[in-house]
Image (tube, rainbow, N blue to C red; front, side, top):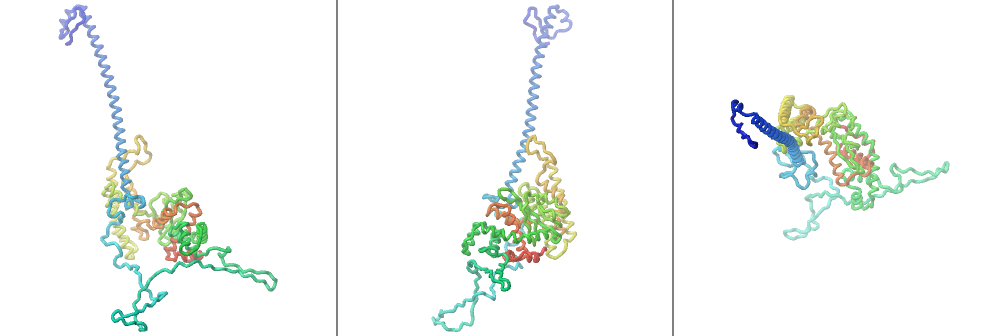
Amino acid sequence: MSKKVSGKPGAVHTAHLTRSQLATFSKSNLIDLVIVLAEQNAALRTKIERLEEQIADITEQNAQLFKQNVELEKANKTLAQRVEDLERRLGLNISNSGKPPSSDGLSKPARKKRTRSLRGSCGRKSGGQPGHPGKTLRQTSTPEQIIDHYPHICPDCKHRLSGVVCDRYVRRQVFDLPPPPPLIVTEHRARVCVCPACGTRVQATFPAGVNAPVQYGDNLAAMASYLQTRHCIPDNRLAQIFSDLHGVDISAATLASLVARTAAVMRPVVNRIQALLCGPDVAVKHMDETGLRINGKTRWLHILCSPDLSHFRIGRSRGDVTQEVTGSVVHDNWASYRKIPGVRHALCNAHHLRELQALIDIEKEPWATEMRSILLDAKTAADRARDRNSRAVVPARIAAIERRYDACCQTAIRMHEALPPLVPDKVGKTRRGKPKRRIGHNLALRMQTRKEEVLLFLNDLSVSFTNNEAERDLRMTKVRQKVSGCFRTHVGAENFCTLRTVIETARKQGWSILETLRTLPDQLILNLKPC
């Protein structure tokens, strides 16, 4: 002990006392010493309890701070990941995603060329290449009108040249349109006569299609259907066109009825086109879909087509795809197409090139550059085989491309598996199902799993590299909505699909579109060529 006992009479110093010295203490001194030691012990216990309470409080605070730190780290990772996702969205444009050109807005990407080919540079100048036939305007040997121009005076000697024979000439031809003609009115008269045998009054029958005292003819109906459906001109503007060019005062409602009349006549042709596309006569089909607003509700326009046929159809949902298709189907990997039984699937590689371009531009993933090069090399090999009229690509070439393809997929998957896992979208949220993966990881896994579908164009030259056939057919429908707005009725949308089917098919078949809209359906069905 090193403390001094005080506060009572007879207090003694107790520092460094030996056992013999303690023995000399009196009983009262020992009692006092015990009391002092007990008080000191109680004070120490109190102090220890306070310290233990403080330690417990600090421990609890430390645990809370640690928990908050963990939550903040998770929130920070979530926010950082969200920032990356938002920055990725800002980095997407028409060259590295499926976004439409209008989505770029007024602030276009800061590049010399806003649009760039996903195939890369070929080193040649833009425009027509050597060997391209071109479509230069050339003189004809059978002009409809000839106007002779004679010289009047010699520019050297000023001698008059009237009456001088001009046996030579220089030709110049002007190709032009005649003035828009006014409507031609054809009157049909059904004559009435009296039968000499029985005295019955007999009236002649009018031709088919002449049903009213006054009506518009098939040529005007075909022109209205062509301009409205093919060139997406609204009814009001279409009425102005007929008024300005042909001097006819026709209402928008009348034009709509003429279009509906033409569509009703052409429905058997549409049914035949659909049957040909679904059947075995067309080996490779293209399928796609896009949203369509009808009477304020979202419906879906589905396209089923080939290089020679096109069929448009309205569906209530995006997954309402045609199930009766056979053969090979090229599409964009939408899950609903997987439900079609008994078909070979081919994926659109234009979508893959855009996704890879986004990984190159935004995430800077090196494997994406290699995969893009592999796909383009495979496309070049398939194109050269077609140019040689070969039935297939050389097997050794296919094997080499597939080895590069497999190695690239494995490299990408190993790279992503080595990265730290992504955190949930929200702190504390329990994610069900598979763990969230990065976009590049998902793409690599898809391309590895769907290798046969991605490279089907390489093993079967009848399959296209992309699904552009279907996307081109759908593109004008989006123009139709931008120009004319949504369809007010489901019947109007169905009429549009009917006429669009006939017009696009006529264009692919090489027919005159106006003549097609005036021809009887039975004759058109006989002339259809499936491939």
